[in-house]
Length: 189
Ligand code: HEC
Ligand code: HEC
Ligand code: HEC
Ligand code: HEC
Image (cartoon, rainbow, N blue to C red):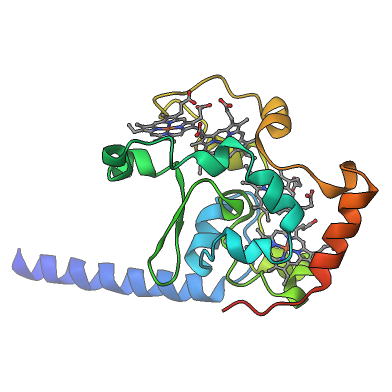
């Protein structure tokens, strides 16, 4: 019996190693599978202040949405409960600090590797570095019945009501502002 357990343990470890090696090698975004899990396995969250350096327009607009208030919606004792905090935060940084609220990377993916100007300007590089396509699944991982305050979720309507404005639709003045800010290359670290 003991020997059988040992053998099983060895096999399990070998499988885990093989899997880890495979995960290392797999540096390209998966097709339809869980893209967020893939991104979280390879990249780190950096926080919305980093995105703000180049995307002030989206940041300012996002700041007026409920997503930017999601943490404050929880009472202090609820903030300590993982079963509540889960959908009211973005994640943790590489240095383990908590990024509260539903910020940029909750929808766009962890930004450690796509946040540089060079990568951001190249859609293919950005996708390979963790910038995720946004689909209904992006939202439904939080907007579902596990939320004690769940209301019906209609993707098309929610897109209009819940996220930030887009510069192209917001008129010439704001577009100019965004262009100016995006060309200011800042090296976040
Ligand atoms: C150093 C400047 C810089 C930083 C920092 C930055 N971006 Fe970008 N981002 C850009 C540029 C430049 C583009 C390309 C704009 C274009 O082509 O019109 C872009 C494009 C994008 C796009 C649109 C991609 C597409 O396919 O249309 C998204 C979404 C985005 N960034 C999200 C983020 C998020 C989220 C963060 C923070 C984690 C971030 N960016 C940080 C400069 C930056
Ligand atoms: C599965 C994700 C998820 C979990 C887990 C979750 N929430 Fe939320 N919470 C949401 C979403 C999404 C909303 C926005 C309302 C909606 O459309 O469902 C929300 C809204 C809220 C609001 C605002 C209510 C309103 O009507 O504006 C409060 C307060 C809140 N949640 C408290 C909690 C507490 C307390 C817990 C833990 C017991 C919790 N949430 C767990 C996703 C979640
Ligand atoms: C609730 C989800 C969500 C959050 C949070 C969010 N975005 Fe977006 N963002 C979107 C969607 C949806 C689009 C439309 C394009 C698409 O489908 O990829 C978009 C588009 C963009 C674009 C492309 C240009 C544009 O405005 O259409 C940029 C840049 C961007 N977001 C940056 C940000 C930044 C910076 C933040 C944080 C301050 C942020 N986003 C937060 C969902 C989100
Ligand atoms: C990480 C979890 C999470 C993700 C991902 C997320 N949301 Fe939310 N969303 C929330 C929470 C939590 C609230 C409630 C915040 C509050 O009331 O303070 C909320 C609120 C909203 C609201 C306002 C609802 C109201 O009652 O006024 C809309 C609209 C919305 N989200 C749309 C979206 C869309 C569209 C997407 C995907 C593109 C998305 N959300 C992705 C967690 C999330």
